[in-house]
Length: 97
Image (tube, helix red, strand yellow):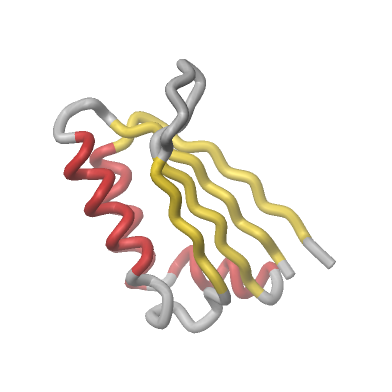
């Protein structure tokens, strides 16, 4: 199994609305992307300076499943929106037994 975690820092302009839209769009990927086994989307509640605004934790059967997700048309629509409203993101992928 492959775990894919991404954390996003959103721009301040329309931040709350953009966070909600991104969360909804991401959650809608379940059932749309066949290789996506699970997804958890979290909105930040930490008040620390280093805190990110939104995170996703997704799982795939294998690396190929993650690669298929990365280029899936529905996922790319979400990526296009998120790139327009975020400052940056951080990612980690790892294999889990």
